[in-house]
Length: 233
Image (tube, rainbow, N blue to C red; front, side, top):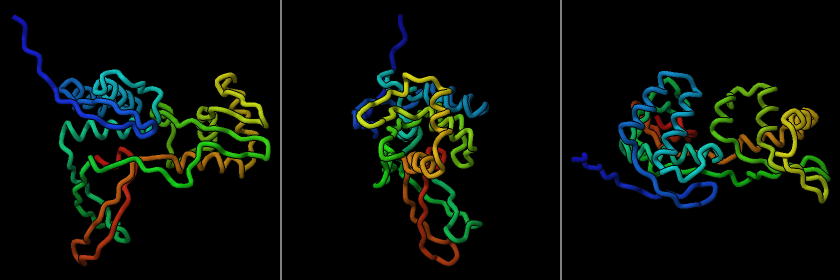
């Protein structure tokens, strides 16, 4: 006699970058084990675990290796909220008084991906040349420290995210060029051109949520903006 199959409730969400509707389910014990084991390892192992869990919990219907990092973070956050609870308590520093930690409850279902009004993936470098950028995947971002981005890491990151180079009426596909050629192209940018392209990364969509706080002693009101997946754990 076969053991019974445990049915798991499914939910729906829209992928931020495409607005495509997909189904997902909560973690099962097997996914919780994957995450716990990864947390004892390296950053790469945590990234691989998150991608594996997102793939499992969306029934293999999306390409987790190609989706932008903010899509993966958003999907993972929603999966987690249905797995271990929609509300989490975070200890946040009070603005202007960083030594004071204030516990704040955050409903993960209210956290969304926000887009800067001035953000664009097409950057004009000269009157005749522009680049169209692709969003970095989670694996690409796991290789660099966005808070302390070294010069060569920045060149490699930009080169790996170039989708097209447009020169006049001609469009060049980045996939048709070698990595070394793209790195040389980025190395040949002026400081102002490089800064324009770098702005693509600093302003790209990200998980963001505003939290209102009350100072425990002065009762003064304040608010903080938390960003990125790691901020919600």
